[in-house]
Image (cartoon, rainbow, N blue to C red; front, top):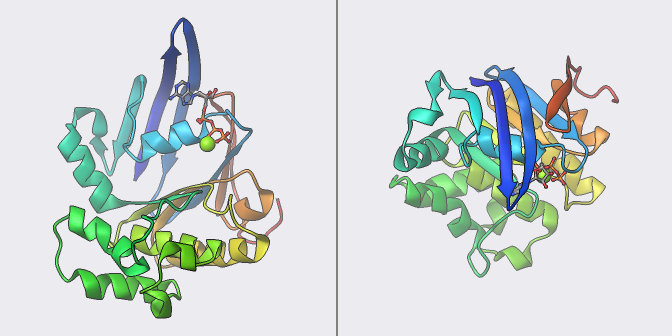
Length: 228
Ligand SMILES: Nc1ncnc2c1ncn2[C@@H]1O[C@H](COP(=O)(O)OP(=O)(O)OP(=O)(O)O)[C@@H](O)[C@H]1O
Ligand SMILES: [Mg+2]
């Protein structure tokens, strides 16, 4: 479903060039749950941005469901992101002063899809927050806010969830809740790619890929729940 082929990403800031990704090849099949690990600055978010069609490689190829995204214009990329990918970020990225319900409805607004209220409600129920639909983000705990963000990622029924440090701002109890939810979604057939620094979080995945200095240094299957 995801194919990176010899991908490099070079950032040029003034005279300095940073090779954030340096010849990365990676295939992720439908139904996998892959944890991407690595030190700060190793290229994890850069890779996630490319996988999510938020940024383009400097060289190499990225195919999503067999489609080379380099050939797509901005509108086509936005449509793919909206249809195929649900994003979850460390900082939740919920709109303030906007109810959980409205936050979850937003991707449906962008996609001009109907039946928004019912679908958002169902997504909130899916993450165990049906009773909090009317709450504002600042009336929810961090773990609950992240579950709203996951509901927002799910509401368009994407085949894939990309999560960049989804538990980075959470305590250990909320981390477990969020990870168990991601595992359930994965077991229901969704592909999940998540970035994390933490072994405990990566141990929920079925495959662990390690990055160092823009290169993949290991890529191993992992039995869910076994300690790393
Ligand atoms: N927009 C940018 N402009 C210039 N350099 C960048 C940019 N984004 C990232 N970099 C550089 O590319 C490298 C990889 O950054 P990236 O954000 O992918 O790391 P990361 O593995 O996600 O780190 P962290 O764990 O701290 O989030 C770093 O050296 C970073 O400074
Ligand atoms: Mg990062």
